[in-house]
Image (cartoon, rainbow, N blue to C red; front, side, top):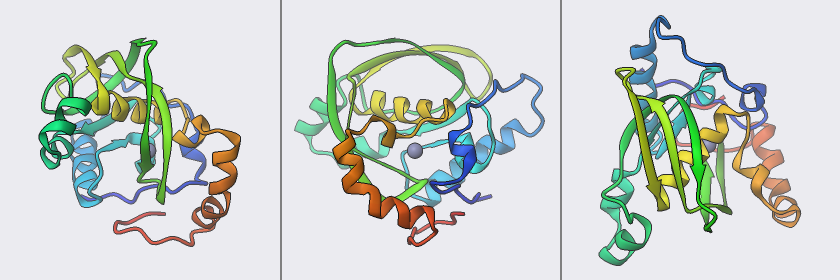
Amino acid sequence: MILPVMAYGHTILRTPCTEVPADFPGLAELVENMWQTLAGARGVGLAAPQVNQPLRLFIVESRSTFNQLGPEERARLFPDGAGIRETFINPRITAVSAEDWEDEEGCLSIPGLWAPVRRPWSITIEYQDADLRPRRRTCAGLTARMIQHEYDHLEGRLYLDLLSPLQRKLLAGKLEKVRKGRYRAGYPIK
Ligand SMILES: [Zn+2]
C-alpha cells in the first residue's frame, strides 16, 4: 500500500524517533509499504517519520541511480559497488570520514526543492536488516550520502539544517509555499 508522505511543516519531521522493538506489530507490513511508497514516488530513500511513524527505520535504494549513470560517474560516485537496496532498523552511524563533499539533495517531504549539501564522504553504520539480523556496513559516495540523509530524519533533522544562512534565505520563499501546501508532487503527500 502506498502511504502519504508527510510534507515540510509537519511536526513529526522534527521529532526524534524511538527504537523499533523486536516485537513491533506490523513491522514487515510497514517496511513493505515503505518500499511501495518509495517506488511510487521514484525516490531513493524514505524514513519512517516521513510516513508518520516516529521509528528508527529507513530504506535506501541507490542501485537504480547507479544503473542510470555512465562509467565515469559510476567510478566517482559509487567507489564501493553498484549501490544498495537495504532496510535499516535501529541504525547507529559509528564513524564518519574527515573528508567531505558537496552534492545536490532533495527530499520527498520537501517537493520541488534541491540544494547542494556538504556531508562526510564515507560512513560506517551498524543496524538490523529487514530480518532483524545485526549488520555493519561501510559505504562511500552517493550511497553514504543517501544513508546520512535518511539517518538525519530519525534525529528530527532535515538537509535544510546543513545549508548556509544564505542558501536558506534563497530557498525561503519556496519553503513557505511547501509549508502552506502550495506545491505539486507526483505522489500522495500531506
Ligand atoms: Zn528526506
